[in-house]
Structures are given as C-alpha cells and as structure tokens.
Image (cartoon, each protein chain N blue to C red):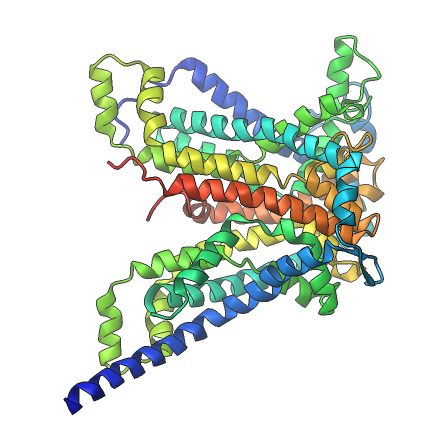
Length: 303
Length: 276
C-alpha cells in the first residue's frame, strides 16, 4: 500500500519534472511569438479604436476609424483592387503549376531538374530587382513593350494610366514569378500517385487529358485545395509589385488593402486608421484560414 | 519511374519552353542591359542584343555612387542571424512538442498552426508600433528579432523529431541522460537536414523581405540590399543602365546560393502540403 503511493508520487514527480523541461524548450519560441505576434495582434485591435498619430499620442475615438473606413472610397477601391488581383492570380497560380507538373511527369529527370530550377529562380530573387526590370520593359513610350506597340501603330500608350490594364499586367507578373514553389509541390504529389493507375488507364485507351482529369486531379484533390488556399492568402498580401509599379494609382484604382494600410500609416501617419484596416484584413484572412482547416481536415484519397 | 516518354505532346513542349522563356526573360534583360550604355537602352529600337556595345560604365556607377557592399553585408548579417535563431527556436520548440508531455500542448500547437497560416504582414502596423515602443526601430537587433519566423521552423522540426525512434530517447533516459543532454546529443545531430531546410528558407525569406525592412530601417548605414536597391533605383530613375546593373548585382548572391541549395527548396516547398 505504502509502496504504491510512493510509486504514484514518484511518477507524478517525474511527469512534473518533464513538464518543466517542456516549457523550458518551448520558451524561446513562446517569447518571440508572444512579443512579436500575439501581443501586436491584441495591441493592434486596441489601437484601431483610437486616434494614434506619429508622436504616439493615443486618443480613444470608439468606432470612428471603422465608420471612416466604410465611408472612404479609397477603402472600397482598394478592396475591389485586392479582389481584381486575386481573381487573376489565384486560378493561374494553381492551373499553370498543375499543368507544368503534369507535363513534367513524362519528361526525363534532366528536364525536370532544369525546369524546376528556372521556374523557381524568380521566386528567390528580390522582387525589387524584378520590378526594376519590369519597369524598364514597360517604360512608357520608351520601353520594349511600347516599342512593340508602336509597330502596331499604338503610340502614347502607358499601361500604368489605367487600372484595367495595369492590374492584369501586374497580376501576370506576380504569377510568373511565383510558380516555383507550387510546381515543386505538385511534382512531388504527382510522383506519389502509383504508376499502375496510369498504366491501367492507358490499357483502357484513355488519352493524356482523360488521365489528367480522371486520375491526376482527383488524386491531388487535397493538394489542390491547399495550394488554392495558400494562393488566396498570398493574394491578400500583394504589395511590393504594384506599390513600386503604379503606387496604387491612378487614384487608388490599382491599390490593394495592404498598400492602403501601408500608405495610411507611413505616408498619412494615421496609425489608428491603418490598424483598423489591419483588423479588417485580418478578419478576412482568418475566415479564409478557418475554411482551410475545415476542408483539409476532410480525409484525403488514400492509396 | 518514368515508363513512357513518348506521351509528351509537341504542343506541351512548345508551351513549356515558352513559359520558361517568359520566366527567365527578366534575368536576360538584367544580364544584357547592365553592360550597355543607358543611351542604347533608351533608343528605338532598344538594343538588347547580347555582347554588343559592352561597357562597364554602369557597374562603375553602382560601385561609386552606392554602398551596395554595405547593403549586402547588412542583409547577410540580418538573414544569417534570423536563420540561426529560427533554427534554434524551431528545433527546441519542436522537441518539446514531439517528445515531452506537458499541459497545454494542444493549445500551443494550435497557435503554431494558426501562425503558419496567418502571414506576419497582416500585423505590420501594430508590430511596428510595438517595435517602436521597445526602441527596436531603426536597429539591426530590432530587424532581427522581429523577423524570426514564429511557426514554420517549429512545425517542420516537430514533424521530423516525432519520427525519431522512441527507443533512442528511452535508452538515453536509462543511461541517466536528462532532457538537455538528449536535446544536445540526440535531437540536434539528427536534426541537421531539417535545420538546413529551415535555415535556407528563412534566410531567403528574410533576405528578400523588402516591406518590413523598409519600415524598420531609416538610418543610411543600416540599409539592407532590398531597401538600398529601391532607394538607388528611385534615385537613378532616368538611368536604366545603372538600374539594371544594381538589379543584377542584387540578384547574384541569392541566385548562386539558390543553385547550390536547390534540394532544400524542393524539400521545404512541400512542408505543410504533403503528409510525412
């Protein structure tokens, strides 16, 4: 009897000792997470209900920032802009890598390696450097693009003067510089599909497209969902390329929410307003993240 | 196993080549334009033929009028420190999550998952205000501390440490090895490949993090490569030769590193997407 109690005590002492080390090893991460992630999140919500200027003077103003946001045409234009970039970027960043990976399935190892290398290269290049090149190519009146247009008799045309032209262009540039990671994901997923499925389909006379539609796509369903959601969250963060190419203009028509947040804070010094915008963007992103959790929890096709 | 190679249609091959040409075209323009006089780049038709009218004038301008080596040095210091810190916080927390029972584990891991999905850029403004309140604004230490990735390393390490055999840890325990010794003698050596992946990915992410660094850095001497590059490009707005030259210089360090470390990217890309 006595013996059992001491054993229990010993076990619980061991568990407690282990637990202490658990927190010990967790501590560095927890510290960084709390100070630079969780606390700013809470703090940002607080600041969004204040008037907060550059000098750091806070003045509570209730939901004024939110009311102002919803009456601000810059917000609605930036929201519309975010969606307009997203509807081009999200599907293309899914379909092109999927197509590339499916094409590479039947290519030699060397073609695979080379394609992945080249397609990944813009993804590891500083986007500011890429924008410098693009701004040169699309230089109004002077650049390569304008010169090609001149050959077709179109002169005095600047693609940045109208968001109907600049948004599709910038979206394509973003897509072409972000294909690498997704292509690699699809390649390794496709390699995981048993070759026998394709062989069986071939015996039944299925052509390449039928194999793609009836084997590849269903087998990759969870990965497709994953890429779709990462694309969506990535699209909410479009900032550097349009900021450096159009600055969001003319008159916010090519702006995104993240650009508006940045400009409200660092150009207009309205930190309260910018924080409120941040909260709105965070809510949108969280909603999408919840959807991701719900969908990816569903079990994948097992093979 | 590639059984039949004849199935790739000619159309697909042409489209693939076309795609690769589009993707690599900016690099071609950089490489050629950096060594042409600005006048060649502003004339009609623009001279983008390789090996003609070769000049080093743009390169000289960049080296004389900018502090590109200082920017590269700053970027390397920041990125290497961030990568190292991300590795250690990641493996350490990953070990706790994978092998040590403690209360609240599920809750903390849910936080890791949530952070994985929610990008830091969304918290740009409050993060800046907190950094400013802590006097971390406009300092190297500040940029480093605020750039440590909070989730990715933890997630990857936990996955990998979970797959280490339990017997290894039991045996160590019987031999009187405490948690710290187990961490140093078992977890760290076996985590080297994972550390490579985490390190390389966070190194590149930090190196290219233009938006956060442009917010945090004001001081001229603290400029990083992306920040300095955008500053110099704006200054030389009329001189396309100098712009392309600095774009090329900014691309070279990471381009070379990428080619050397390719396999880490292939491994890192699939984290979170594919089980195991």
